[in-house]
Length: 250
Image (cartoon, rainbow, N blue to C red; front, top):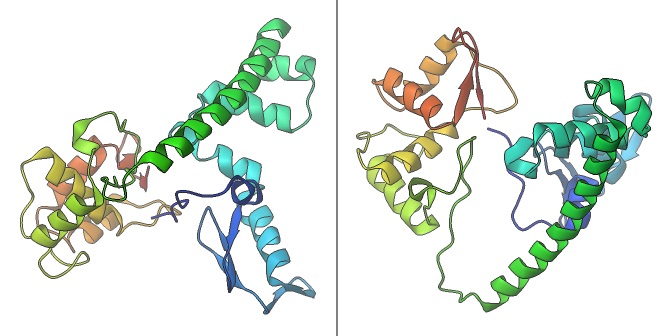
């Protein structure tokens, strides 16, 4: 599956699209990394690691802006309309140029969207300050919840799984290790979600799969691969076309 954006990640790293450690630069969107002190061939040139990373983001993701927008509603908190308009704003289009691209809405509607997005930015800064203050008061022993993939809302007790709970569930249901066979599909919702999240790790979010390929991967976990596939789709972890010809990680 896709390389998860680390949490927390600094604003300047999100803006750049990559994080730097002592030894490498790593892309936040796919995990591609370039070792510091090395040079990399790009066209007829050899470039150092940081420039290679910036070129990678441009060639593989279009730009950091486009890659962030591609995180969708779950990743950005923005509606489809807001993300589309942000793309037009970023392109430098005037409100009148955007008007036909936005379905012929009024100019005042586009201006209202600009204002609403500026307000959202202000509110986001306040929210980040609140979360920083909350983190400062949280006890080290407080529960740490796992990141939930897919399209389903996290406002559901099935998805409120702490890291300790998740590790315990995975040890219980994958006796040969997390990449091994599933001993049984649990009936309790929280346990089932944890198991499905672990199985989802066997898929690569950068590609699409046929039904046969999905079945082949799921058979590494259980003979009842059809049930696993149905649950992965129902829980919003896998997406698929209407005819079931293609599957992908949400």
